[in-house]
Length: 116
Length: 112
Image 1 (tube, rainbow over the protein chains, first blue to last red):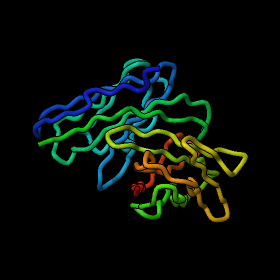
Image 2 (image 1 turned 180 degrees about the vertical axis):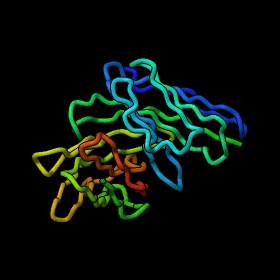
Image 3 (image 1 turned 120 degrees about the vertical axis):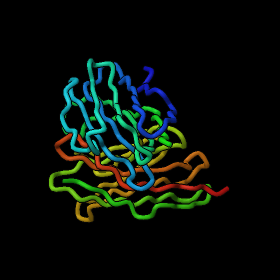
Image 4 (image 1 turned 60 degrees about the vertical axis):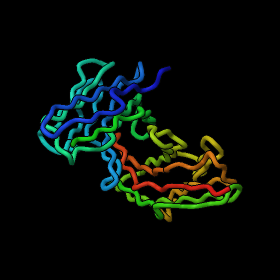
């Protein structure tokens, strides 16, 4: 299995620009999670989907952030407009949810975003 | 709600020495507990997890952790450190909502 695939691996953009991060989960997994990792705040869950439906987006920092999962094999996280404080590593993870706590989340390699 | 506290942001051990990483949790429901490892510039990889049953959990790379409900702890140990164990380690907890809450992480340095 190829694992969770994220693209791009690195993104440098200027403040005000739109940024789109992409994720391909492991085939057969029914849940997908987006996390953000910063030195100040550690790992934060932004949103998660189950069967392509957003279940909990309470971690999305503000309206500038949006996430979609149009099908079981693809998800995007978009920031528009981007700000320097959005600079972080963004991880996508997927799992096969069969019951609380019994699932394992498999993480992608992350996208390192720098907003100048 | 669930949360974890990792004691010590940085641990330095000699090669061959015991590795002990401390994690205490808070949970309003029976917790599910996890340890993940992150190598530089990589994503997180599951080391081990506790769900129910045996309180001593064995994971990959020689790591193990013991769930102690009375102490609300889930400390991670490895009897003999190897240079390849240098990484950042995260403790995490979830309840019935599938959401993982991570600790702040502990960076392990292994001295030759």
